[in-house]
Image (cartoon, rainbow, N blue to C red; front, side):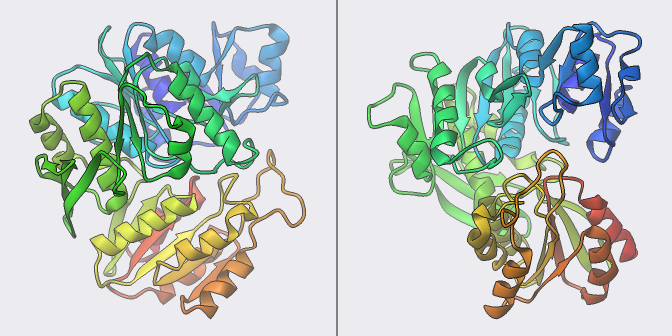
Length: 455
């Protein structure tokens, strides 16, 4: 919602918004753009009456402000409907979708298009420091890189966001079960991604990671013009070779059936980001963008906020803020930390906050993923009034901690970020790395921890 608000403001509209609270980085970005954020929800926020109200998917029909919109009969749009109406009609949309890596990959693609001089538009679900802004409309007729989310759009628009995005080409990074609050099972998830594939024009580039069986399954066995696969598995057309990981980042050479491309240097860490970069390289070739522009853009790309973001260092401890919440992403981020901080003790501090991580559906997989850390701190399951859990449905954090301790990974549980902050600083040593993972504010724990350490 924040990137959309910024683009609308840049396009000359008067924009304001309501939310429960404003927290970094988006709160500051909106303030810098001159967009007023009203705390809480109230019918009074609709005075004077707006011309259009854009309603996000976290808002229910019973929300007092949304209910007043309905009572007054004001024009209202879901987030993706607004993006499509105001920005995609006269641009060529490049949709980056997938269970993991959407924000990083979209940011990389947008940066490549900028370096190549394409004057692109873009809308990324995170603050990317290397782009010219949080979001940008771009010129008419230009490429528009957009993060395509499979989550539903609004209480009145229950389809996935990306079905509104009119793709001219697409990257699908992964397909796994997620969003257990709205998807019944993985087959239901696959059906949404199949809808995205069906929207592509005949022969349009479709770049997919063949390492994910569910993604391959939804594509079927019939050859599709424009389909290109990438990944580590031998079944892929493009693969990353000559991989090198170190404190400065990762590097690799793309390989197409043994033919090597240029060495691509990343400031980001881990195989998870190597694959994100490979996807961008492959699509860029299909768009006619030079390898040199791709290499230059990727070499300088510092990533998005809250994606392996180094918040700071104090008392010899590095504090990292990360958005990982699915067990595959948690494992990928911890593996990246091992690459970046080889030989140092890595703490995983995890908050089960997403509507899937709060549930027991991935109980065993979270235990396996967190075991990649040297030490684990597990916060309590985050309470959400709009997604109540039945008895026995929630992730059993005590069982996860017990299993980790029994298999040799020291772990403890805490009732939220305040309790973590009371205990964790006293257990840290110089040289430690703390990876804080949550898809929400997590009580601003990374920055508060840094302050407690003297940073």
